Image (cartoon, rainbow, N blue to C red):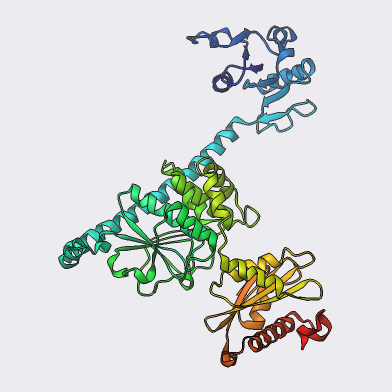
Length: 496
Ligand SMILES: [Mn+2]
């Protein structure tokens, strides 16, 4: 039972909510406050709650929660004292007054609430929402302006319009959404979301990318969710009136010449970008661009369909490394919202795609050919490879071996030696090692590099090539790690 003392304007509001939760008993000393009630759907007692008799009439001992809400602070204090005496186990909530922070000192009160503070916080929350609303109005305006520009282009240039009717439908679509090179789940999901938002406003868009779709998980995501992407090589940029960029704000990672093509929209969460646009929402404190787009979708009252919800959820998971990397409150909120809407079965299939036989071969070779240095470093040459994505997988895989904390896996593809490095040893920075040894790069725990095969290219004998490459790469790595080769190896064969 909830006992509420004080049926003024504030008490009344609280009673309205509380009666949906539990049985409610109300005390007020003024009988007239109950006069206006059309229907009495709670018990009330008329009397002075600072008197024991009144509280007993209101079954004080049965109350689980007691709220003291009158606006007379001295009386609230008196009541609180009496209540804590008569029902010491009840959860006691009292109305506080900012001016008298010490009012309830010495009384066992569980929670003091300040109605004005609560109202102010709610107002702040609304201000935040209005900012987002305003932002989305700006976004809509930019999108609509592109639509108009596109329409004018077609009417000014009837020849291209004709072409479009003759099967070349490209210029029927005003917007191009550009993802960064080698797009990751965050950029794919963000592009999907922006496309849906534009659709809501009646504007069509195509999604493009540069580089390639690496990783089986990303390929599975695109296939299972039916995402339509076009490679930049198959896109005629001149056909589009507007360009939007998601999950990127740096010209270095985009497949288009940003000096030549003006960007209309940038939505990103990376810092240090060099690009600008009419509409920019760049928030580096957020863990994933998908979080920003989820916020948009919620604000626009669009309930995302299962495919989009799954994509956005997976994007937030991967970009925050399942909430272990930089994750903001907003990322958790967005993921919480999406969790009810996404499809866990599809997600499971995306996260555990079937492995192709070549990747399995590379993993097998990485295990068989491994050389262990100083009992914790594994180096492995896997020979000729078709799919470079197998290297990071093999490097990850070797890291699971007992005692191994750092791995380097390398192989040859298209006249280059590719090296993938991983470590779980915090004292080792493989990003730095790859940079110093081969001019590569990456993070402390994962990095990669590629170098030209150079003079080795002329070596046609497989075994000699293996020996030469293995030796050259190993020497460079150990040198960059500051390990003297003669003292490091456990298999003498590896050191000759
Ligand atoms: Mn991202």
